[in-house]
Length: 273
Image (cartoon, rainbow, N blue to C red; front, side):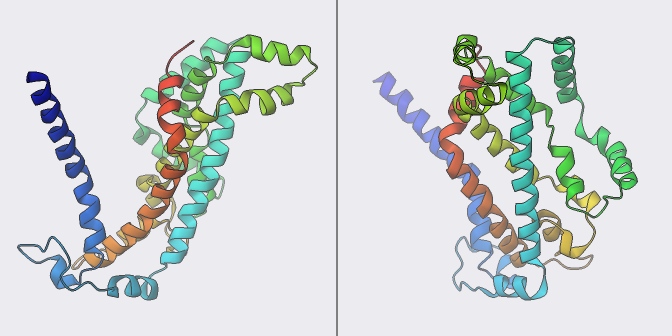
């Protein structure tokens, strides 16, 4: 009897937690179908009684929403592909090869993870300015390519792969490139999937750095573009929620596409075996 009561209490707690985290998402989506007066109405309507597509129509006519979405997709997509490749190669080198300074390099990666990102904003901006990359999408892509967490995750995951597997491939005449592409990569797919979700989400939601680097309206990402819908004296909440809803869709698609790798990549990659 006590066990059943505890189980029901745990289920109620889980349902309450799910409702707590999903309600802002529900409010954002339903708010995108409300007009301005209904959005700021007190008490608010929990469901749009007179749904409208005016916010989406106005968004497409009065803003560069398509440019913002395309820029975000380009930034997040390129960052994810290159960051996963670089982190996977680094994890392979740090675990499957022995070289001078290996421990020092990995220690530097760990130390870098402990440094607040805000401390590097000024040096990174100075570097991008000297490279004449300010207001270019490459300026928001380059700092993401060598994420310390990505190197750490793939290094830990690579440790689960037995050296005997690679040695057997070497005996069969497999080259170093072949070892990495044909043997190593297929085995670490779960780790790459987990890292891809993390990098894509990080690049998509990296508002502060994108706000610093991008000022041209046509080159802004969706997060920076949403902020331009707020003026000093007014804010179009319906348009903001509509643009945020459109910006949420790619993240959802990426998570659904890689979700089968996510939990396995985190749990297996964190255990050395």
